Image (cartoon, rainbow, N blue to C red; front, side, top):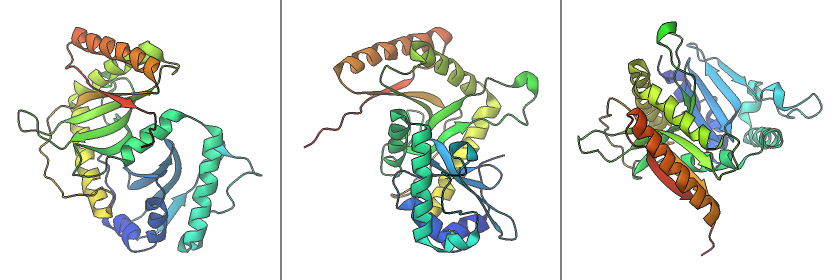
Length: 288
């Protein structure tokens, strides 16, 4: 099943019951709206889901707020957006997001989450070389026979190359982000991601599902005004490719990540996988 929301759900965000909620999401650069299966929209902060919306065929709105694992009875958000009356107030919506973000931040602090979200938000235009269309993508295998299933893995970012390749197709990249060299998975983690990405690339149903998701997500994000620029018509390659985004914070991390990059390329060659596109990203902020 593709990641599609019904027209009533889109219209609710564009001009009806969820319009102010959408305004609150769009004005906050730390929030990401992502389209999911089963007619659901999820809002993320630092890779963590802080709100889900559902709309049935009768136009009835259902909002699920931050999961209880992030708070106790004393610290829970003071605004309950599952109460539709609160969706009428942008002030209350802002207050909810402010409180929910604080709870998530305390629960799960991590530089990688911030950089991942900033990369996604910084590449939401057709005018860019790369267009990020989704975060935390996972191949749903519920309809795949058990003997044909592959290892479960979440892809950090789904990226479209807006420029056609030599065959005239637009490549879809399964992007893995690694920040610095202190991550607990280390070298084995990158190799593991290469192997799992290769499994997705070689799984026909996974490739088909990915393309269907990308097409539907792009169309709906364009409709919502999330993706900017002059729309382009894409002809997607039948199989995705891998992208490694290696973010460094100084010379030492740059050198270490460069070595891991080469090892990842060697491993890809060893298993017969096309060499991953590796992007070295300077995470330091230079004042100019």
